[in-house]
Image 1 (cartoon, rainbow, N blue to C red):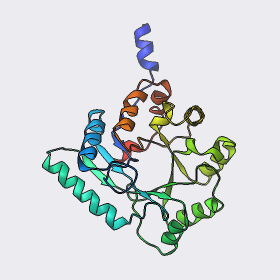
Image 2 (image 1 turned 135 degrees about the vertical axis):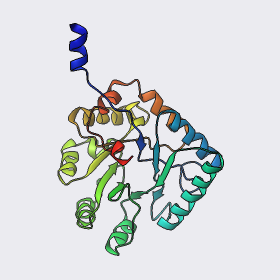
Image 3 (image 1 turned 180 degrees about the horizontal axis):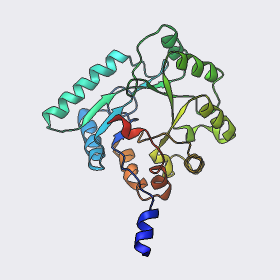
Length: 243
């Protein structure tokens, strides 16, 4: 009887099959540097059960001046390399756009942006201070038909200081992507605590590896034994809708 009750009331979790945030295209940003390093990380993530990786090079006007064309060209190079090695995994590319004037101009000029799926746009902001144009950007992007994903909100100090700002972003339709490594405390105790708070409140729509190298990938495995990671997997995450 008690076993039956345990099964009936058990919380089910779904494994993550799709990762939406990583830096696995060599030489484009601060992620992997070579094709061999890319292969090493991809194989490790595949061993953890991932079937699709949507890698997201940085696009920043002042640092990583990647274009949509150069990202897709590098994607084809990596896919060709994987085919040569007979590695069977889905690999796609979007981008992690930094909120700067370059991104605003792209939106105003109606340039084609690299999205996750057909409509999800991954973006990041300054880590210390709330961008003065954040709300204007949200309005502009959403009127262009994009659904915004804020990368690693648990790492932004301006959200640490006031969680009502995070709630306001959610009310404006922004989706939150938590870094799995934040759950392990990799960035800071404060970032881990905020990640826990977001999970407790159900403010998590996506989990991402934000993998730049093999050590990051190994943190995904480390997190698997964390109760907050398991709790996050019970939320209606959108990762596996992209299979």
